Structure formats: C-alpha cells, structure tokens
Length: 250
Image (cartoon, rainbow, N blue to C red; front, side, top):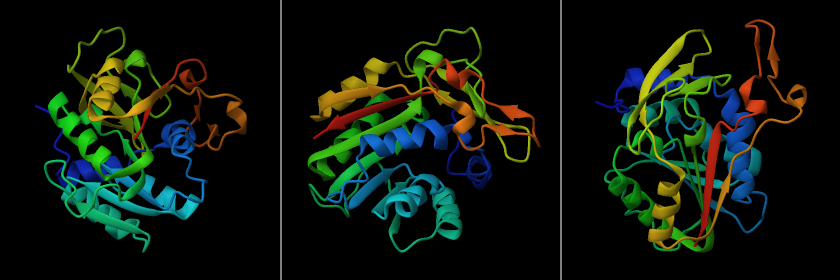
C-alpha cells in the first residue's frame, strides 16, 4: 500500500506541512540550478506541482510563466483556490503525458518530491522522457527529493525512514511531516538510490548531469532559524544534507 495523493485528506495535510527546510535549502538550490534569474528563461514546467507552493514561489520571486501539472485533482483544487495567479497554468495530467505541450516548448523544468512517491522505475522513466520531449535544447531539468544517503535522520520539519534502518532499492519508508499546527502527518514513500536518478536521466537523453546536496551554513542568518513559540531550531541540516538535487541538460 502507498499514500493516496488523490484524496482530499492527504492533499490538505500535505498543504499544511511546514516546509521550512525545503524553502530554506531545497527550493533555492533548484532555482539556482534552473538559472531562473536569466532573462531567456520564460516558461517553467512544474511536474508534480501538488498544492502549488513551488509554482507560486517561481512567479512571485522570478516573474516566470509556470505550467504546473499534477495527477491529483484535490491537490490542484487547493492550488487553484489558494495560489491562483494568471502566470500559473494548473493542469491535471494522466499517465505522465503532456499532450497540450509541443516538443521543445519549455525553457526549464522541475519535479519536487515526485519520484520518491512513485514505486515504479518505469513510471519514473516515462515522466523523465516526457519532460525531455517538451524541453527546448539547452533546457535543464531539476529533480528535488529527500536524500537517500540521510534516510532516517531527523531534520527540523521531517524524517524520511526509520533511524538506523537500511532500505533497499524501491523499498517503502515511513515519512513524518511536521504540521504547522503541531503533530506529524505520516506518509509512505519509496527509497531510490542516487544511481536510479542518474540512470533515468541518462536513458532519456539528458547530459551534463549534476548532483547537489546542500547543507545549512550560517543558520542564524536564515529565516525561521529559531522559532521561540515552538522551541524549534536547526539541528542536523548543518551537518547532513536533507535533500538531493539532480540536474540534467537537454
């Protein structure tokens, strides 16, 4: 059994997740890798946009057009109702297909926390191949997932996997997400080693593949470094990388 992302309960719980760690370390690394500050980047694909948090940051921070797609109707309902913007085109997709996009139509693309929620390498590969098709030559694709090498480590807002346990390729893990209102949301995701990411990108035709594993430096300079109301402060993000960012170029 895996998490049902197409239910209102799961979609709402995920939207309520406090993504402090992601917005401090993960998303900025993705935006840098995609060179969103460059003027020739106009259209960005967010494949697996969920409730629209990342797409909203792209349009408000960089003024780009975003095609934000997801396979969960409840996720898109949240996105459209809470993060609507004329620069974001939200679309429901099935079977990893983007029939409304022509070949070479997109400047840059990203998938944040998508592959860890898919239990089949074949399905992951089909997504990567479709992204490759719609990217223009020279376009870059950034994948952001939890780091398979720090599975089980407690981070400020989440823990993916049980401490001290070794997971095999494709094995399910229990994930705890900290909610803004307190408590944890429990999900199931899948463990994919780094070589899986490199292989699916290579097989689709991507080159110049990079892997980034950012850690937190100067934590007191970061927003939300200490939250006195909840007694929260940074811990393992300073010494262990919570995320893996994999980037390929067409």
